[in-house]
Image (cartoon, rainbow, N blue to C red; front, side, top):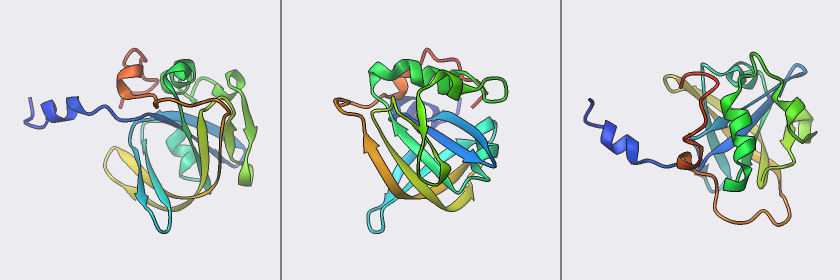
Length: 161
């Protein structure tokens, strides 16, 4: 056991779903590695696993959409975290619409923002995508705490981490 394992097990980040569209191909996955990384100008960074189908689409996408979920949206998290785009059209089972620049916006999400990709960084088994938020929205009445890692511990990942 590594000395950092106990520390890492204590983390309980907010989860989000990130969607990507490139060359007519849509993909999306559940993400636990993401954060605001600048105030002025506003920037977000999301990390997508190289094992995910979404990784291959996100590398070609000009924009990514970050969707915030609440615990009552566990089903949406399970769809985008427990299925793989290699085998499943997740968008056939989710409510979505086209957003800015052809992006995919999940209309069931509590809130969302479309971000233009500014930079990408290889950080190991994940790639960081730095986004400049372009447009966003919130579903009326979708308040409350965000979905956390502990809320989706029952979701078997579509790909290994």
